[in-house]
Image 1 (tube, rainbow, N blue to C red):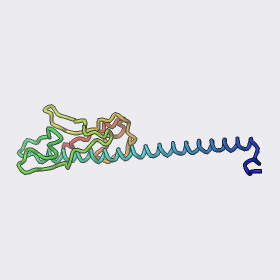
Image 2 (spheres, rainbow, N blue to C red; image 1 turned 120 degrees about the vertical axis):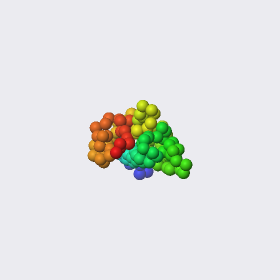
Image 3 (cartoon, rainbow, N blue to C red; image 1 turned 60 degrees about the vertical axis):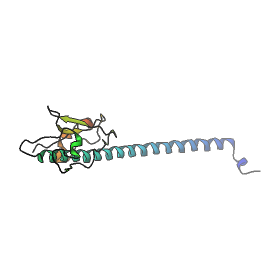
Image 4 (spheres, one colour; image 1 turned 90 degrees about the vertical axis):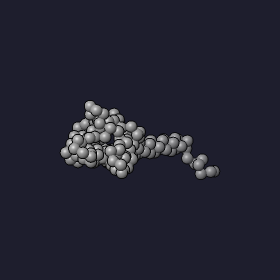
Length: 158
């Protein structure tokens, strides 16, 4: 008689149920791992947004401080930060217009003045941030904000 034939049909049912329970446990484990992975991806995007936003902030500060003459000015476009049109020799404050890490697009929200001058940038994402506090001093205004679009990377004005 074959080995498999020695077990009763009821034993085969228990094996099947055990296999189903094992698959369910594996599914729950994979779901938990996916949640952790997605949260870590979101945190990485936030770190990238803070880095890029501060690059824009520094570029705006440099553009403003390096205005020829006495009347300090802000740029009229982000492209002015790539090559300052006010000088015959190129002055570059940014290497490139970085994409928004939250939307993956090249469009940024702009904080503009009455003449169209750019004071700051922000993400166009309406998602809720994971990071709510414990920001560096330059980003303290972000504490308690409910959307990434509220994280305004502004010229310091100093």
